[in-house]
Length: 343
Image (cartoon, rainbow, N blue to C red; front, side, top):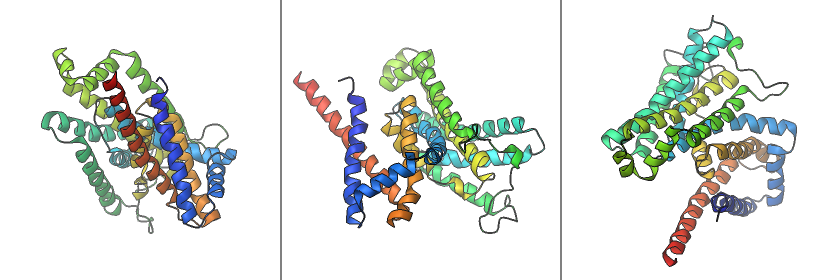
């Protein structure tokens, strides 16, 4: 069926909402009231919409870090490390260009962040192709290494002495901060995410490079027999995914924190994995999925204040969605295999 690919995530979402209702009921809350609070905190007002879109901005970019390599059959989960290193590189570049004009500084910060994230995930792809190192394990380990590097530097040699409670680098300067879109509180990071998803969709669907990626992901042996440079394409695709996540780190520094600190390790990279799977690794489908999960993240605080639920309740919902999404994928795949066998 043509709508089957969309039926899988929809089924997982509906089942997870039902299961989440049972969970909060057992916790002593009114499930319908909790659902209403999630809607109100995510989409109920223009203020809620702005918070949701701000949260969705980095999620779109980190989801691409998993979605792009998935076109090659690779499961890369290193978005969190790319965000952290990208944010650190952006902060250091912003400090180095603190006397430059804002346009030059922001461009330099974006390029530095994309290069840092791209090289990290590109290394994952290179290890997979040249040394047959499992990309899921290597990208996960790189997350821990990247977070450790950030902590070491911001607590040590790069620490601003004035940041007593939360060790951070020096501030990049108010003139180097990303501005808002019009008269809203939505920063330009959201536009970056949407533009990145659209451009990468066009790249994959309208260019020979995208055709080559499809061929490598579909039949590696046929791609090699056709003369495609498999290793180069794997490295490039992984690097593009890492560059997107690195740009998310730059957005967090230039639009939210103004400096690099451990707040960059906020789970955006891990949440991007869920969004990529929910969108079935389609760059355009990532946009609405990121907005949906951005809304859940934005509504978490309201669930805590109104219903006295832990702030991590939103993470429980996300976990349920992920588990049921994977389960539904397996069920639909089995049904498809049985149908094909009977035919």
